[in-house]
Amino acid sequence: MSQLSTTAKRAGWRFASSLPALFGVLVFTFLLMRVLPGDPAVFFASGPTAGKEEIEMIRKQMGLDKPVPEQLLRYLGDIGSGNLGRSLTTGQPVLADLQSRLPASLELTFSALLI
Image (tube, rainbow, N blue to C red):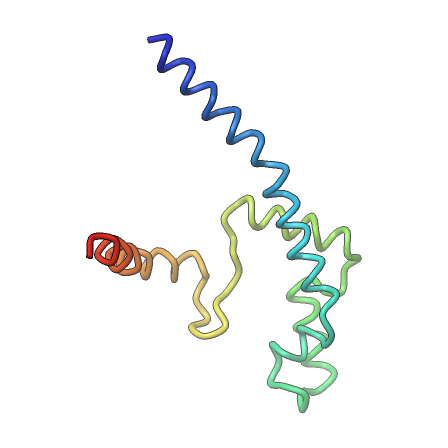
């Protein structure tokens, strides 16, 4: 029983020690998306020919009209609650797309490992 307890403690410690790195990666990717040139609202609208009203509406929907710290907190909250956003190709929630496609991906991965 003590070996199981030691292993569980070690696994718990490794998991806890990985949380700061995960937080750092999330903050880095968030900031990277804000530093890149171009306006995401224009991209999500119908392109550069979109009207100002449409772009402003999309900015408001995406929360881009809020201050960056508030956007970061919302981003971290969404990631923490499992809200990964909407897919650009299907328009479905990303989590639903992952759930429908992950079994086939895992099957291919494990088949390739066996070969």
